[in-house]
Length: 399
Image 1: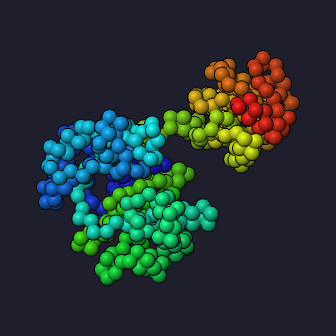
Image 2 (image 1 turned 90 degrees about the vertical axis):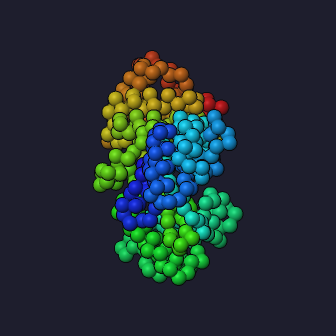
């Protein structure tokens, strides 16, 4: 689960991480008042207006309706000017490198006090699944796309793997600070910052905490100028305050529906819809589709104990994707019975129709009954002898 910048800073600030003063707004009038309040509190005439969407690259992104306006804009002309910019941003579509051409509509803004920036750095704590531990990444190239830095100048990225038994060791925090060229009191501030940030990542079960940029101010303070956080969905039951921050308007409606039905669904860029039971079988199914030259349109796992109603819901979700040109159903019935899958397929197809070819491979418990149900249904389905046969057939039919 992802959250907005203003929410991330709320969590970080409450846990002792230095962040600039800011106020979330949803209207022009609120933006004007927020700017006036920040200027009065800080004595700083510089105010930053930040679009709040779940996508990176906002600072370089532009609005479709206002091509000259950036997703993050620095305003120095007073509260009224902030309100005018907010009026243009709210309800407009922001296009960034991460949103693609479709862009995302901006419904919320974060009005933030300006900061005296002396240096910009990059800092992140992310889950490294290859080692099963959190990893600290840091770089002197703050404010840039870290993917670009990794590709062009990988030597500028510092890494420290965290031992979960002891947390980030003092020598690791010091090494990171020295590697970034920090000295004296600034180095001490950074060590405190990164030590606390890694503790927050562990406490909140995050997949990612990214600060880009992390800034050193003119007075030597280390501050999180930006904040991006993503959480392990499976751990949200431990953090009800975080779960309440979910913004479903920023998520794929199909993924929301799938979650409500107890299904695991992730939309991909291909044109072959996949319905399987079990995450391992799902990965294998996507692999074999690609092996034969196709591209999977989704990861959809109905699980080991799905009902006919859940299977029917899966069919609805897959066929609602306009990019899907064919569907491969690949089921191995261990706990899941093949006749239950067949009943769900029949129900789902009768409800939404079958606008694209569907290949069904069934194996396991009650497989003969399941196949007979499909044969007797009168539906235009293609059966497969095995997984290889099913993948070859659906790839050929979608070419």
